Length: 163
Ligand SMILES: CC(C)(COP(=O)(O)OP(=O)(O)OC[C@H]1O[C@@H](n2cnc3c(N)ncnc32)[C@H](O)[C@@H]1OP(=O)(O)O)[C@@H](O)C(=O)NCCC(=O)NCCS
Image 1 (cartoon, rainbow, N blue to C red):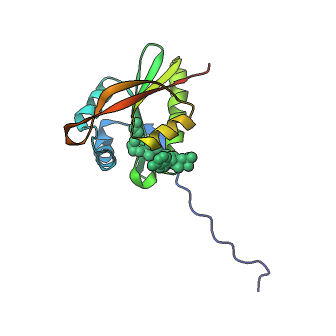
Image 2: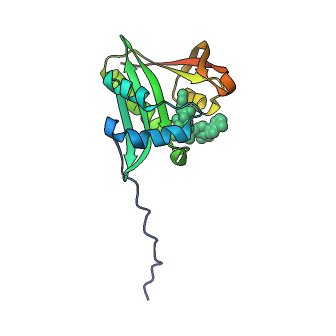
């Protein structure tokens, strides 16, 4: 008998990769979007973003969509318009990885700042952004649609990009 105890095989790690979010991925993206938000983007929102040449990337592993982001380049800033992690993959750090990728891309574009809006009640996203170095710089009143025809304020956050 071998003196060594059997060591369980390590779990096979998902090989996560970034890939461009293209029109032919929209069914999968919309499936996640609709399961994630009470007020999701619709197909036209994504198509408009793609036609406008916005930066749109998704993270996949073994054919599964883990998350995606869409960002718009301005003059000296990049504006994050959508960042979403599929519900079953939340809490695993994917947002941080996407925010890192966004910052790398934005720096490469010569941007000085990253900007975003977030719902005042989205404590989880606010915590993720603050942990990533984003600071609260303003408010937009009644920026988002909310339940029962109401509107929800947005917090504006920004991150200075070091060059
Ligand atoms: C916000 C979002 C992008 C974060 O992505 P994620 O990969 O799940 O992020 P993580 O789970 O790794 O980090 C979440 C952090 O929030 C914390 N958190 C979880 N639920 C929370 C809550 N209800 N309130 C406050 N913090 C919360 C976690 O503890 C974790 O902090 P830690 O890293 O210190 O442990 C993701 O949850 C998501 O897609 N949410 C729905 C869509 C959305 O709100 N997008 C942002 C729009 S501006």
